[in-house]
Amino acid sequence: MATTPAPQPLSAPLVVEFPFTRSLGPVQSAFLTGLRERTVLGVRTAAGTVLVPPVEYDPVTADEIRDLVEVGTTGTVTTWAWNPAPRRGQPLGRPFAWVLVRLDGADSALLHALDAPGGPDSVRTGLRVRVRWARRRTGAITDIACFEPYDGEPATPGTGTHDGRFADPVTGIVAPARLDYTYVPGRAQTGYLRALADHRTVGERCPSCRKVYVPPRGACPTCGVATTEQVEVGPRGTVTTYCIVNIKARNLDIEVPYVYAHIALDGAGLALHGRIAGIPYDQVRMGLRVEPVWTDDSRYPDHYRPTGEPDADYDTYKELL
Image (cartoon, rainbow, N blue to C red):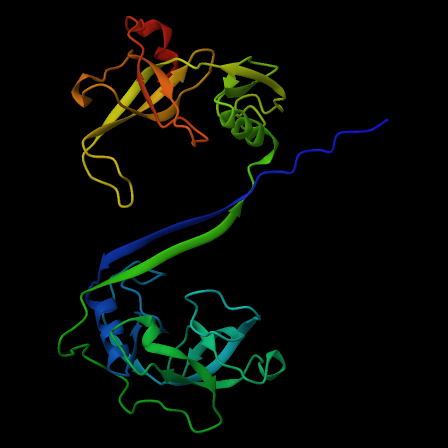
């Protein structure tokens, strides 16, 4: 007897990326400006411990600390891990080691990359290294291009103390944040996504509390039991809450203002979110009855529009707020 092969699980590459902008206090400003000037600064705690990178508050007492100390550009590897396949944006484009380096004059270790042409066999705890400065420095941790093995004399400043003053100090930074991953939705959400491709919305019912979860999660978060019974809901629903969006998102071709709402589809035990269109933004309201609008090539509703039905009574959706 022939059997039907199981459908392949869905998967998709996803990227979450945004610029993180932050201002700098006096300690971090001095540290990053110092790197631009090929100077490494730490901070001394009340107990006399020198921390690199510096922090603004003592990790033991929580007191504010600003006693800056110049430390060496040479140091010792305290621990390491080999990176055989560097990713985009990492310090080196060839295999390297991530290392914790305790710089001469410091009591804590700094995380950075070690250029080790000899491969992982050339790296060890206790290895002496030095800073390799970037050719172009802007006041960022990347001003240290990497560390490299070093067998010379320690490069430790004579006095050690530093007032933290530099010309044109760095007062803020923009750090790009990016996460690349492959998303595999699992059994429950795979069924949900496949149904959306047919312009249907399905959830799963908890066998204990009987609540229908949309999108399905594979288990009831309240009862802790698996959900397997598939239930088709909607397509119409009720606006439970909403917000008016006044800031245009990058790469999103929707004119502001527009409305995003939580929509309780008929038969569902909780609300999902969707954009409301086909009505002036200032006429959207709680209880508004809506239906999905699909485009020809879409795997999910483009937006929801009013059905023309009377508004739902508050008591019918108050438990879904």
